[in-house]
Length: 393
Image 1 (cartoon, rainbow, N blue to C red):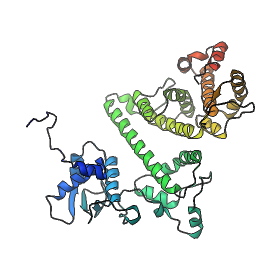
Image 2 (tube, helix red, strand yellow):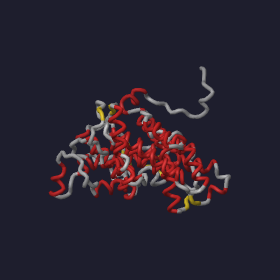
Image 3 (spheres, one colour):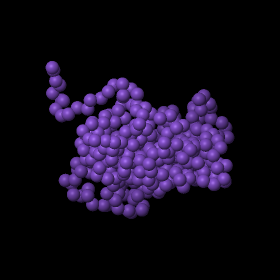
Image 4 (cartoon, rainbow, N blue to C red):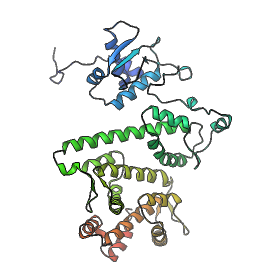
């Protein structure tokens, strides 16, 4: 029988029916557990963490936890001790019925298992809290419940990281304008997703540092250089996350200026830049309005307050932005063009003008040269006028 040369080790015999029923990833992991149990006496079986990693080299620990949580939630597997990576050996057993349990009749999974809580698990503990469980929009004063934060800590997610995601989550919720009674559950899922992104980015950064570890000067913490630029890996990570390349480029001068003035020394500037751009992009994407129909700019148009919040994250002076409103409105009133989002165009315009201002400041020859190179179209007043007429922004 022909055999492909790439099949050099043991393969996982996977049931196509099982994969179609419970999902491909769940079927792969359940098959590994079933193979381990087939050579043991039940009803409780054991599988070492190292053996599981060896059989699933295409998954990292975060992925294993995620798929394992799905099996536990579906009731297809039960853990009899610590969760994955919490002990050297996993003790597990199979459920009585080999079918997912209905959502209204699922048994509670043990506290150590990794799963997403249902909205009922976030029910308020007091009558006053219970009153807030009715459907309601997300207010500016909303805070995640203590129960949600504790559950995130059980998943290894620090409370400080969770609270740092609150602003982005609230902006997204307010932009949707939905009335819900499960904001804590949605916050839990949002934070978990951001945590996975952060961990994956950190792993990529560590691998990059390992590849370049033969250069000892990169191992020591140092202040940010005036001509600093993000690495190609950092830019690719941001672009794969959906960040516009021009947005990334516009964020470099303000990032360098901020950390130059602080004078702090780090050896992870790329990681800090990724976090900085992601936070700005999330607020930018969630805050600007996107009307379904293009409209001309009103004569008395003013930018939304969220615009100034986003600019403040980039350390752009509010008075500087407000001073540009008049000329911005005048140009687009004269042009007579209609667009979906005037806030987004105003944000891009202010960031470009701010970069022009930084390029004109005497902050050293190397830094000035860098700014001039980054913004070649702002060398003269005439060029600035031409840039205003450029409708691409």
